Image (cartoon, rainbow, N blue to C red; front, side):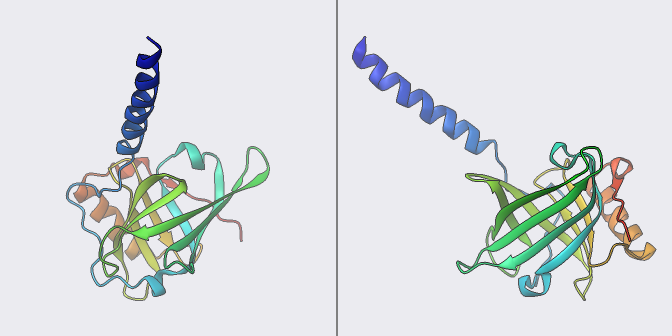
Length: 180
């Protein structure tokens, strides 16, 4: 019985760990395609979150930004920040992103709690890297991003139409408030 416990407990922990890690997906939604000829150096810098789905980790946040910078190891540092208007305080989270494959394709994975990674897929971007549509690993995660606190109506409509064609329920988008 003692020997059985010595084997059973590590095996159970290993199975649990594999299950946990496999539940983390770095995929891309069916029907979506990541941006080709992606230029990470142009993507770096500060972005304003214009719209998102209602995520638990971003609940009650306004003035949400994401700042991306190059790390020494070649990965990308991710700094997310937003003001929780219910708790009257800033919320910040720092993570890391890295390319899933080719660095010329906008498919990355991001982690704020290693070893758990999630998909971060740039599925549309303008040629000047001012406006972007970003999807997670499935139809539950979607962001519209801008270098400014607003986005032109033409890009807003372009991104919404693209997201709808993929299967996102864009009616559920929350439009993020940004103070001037």
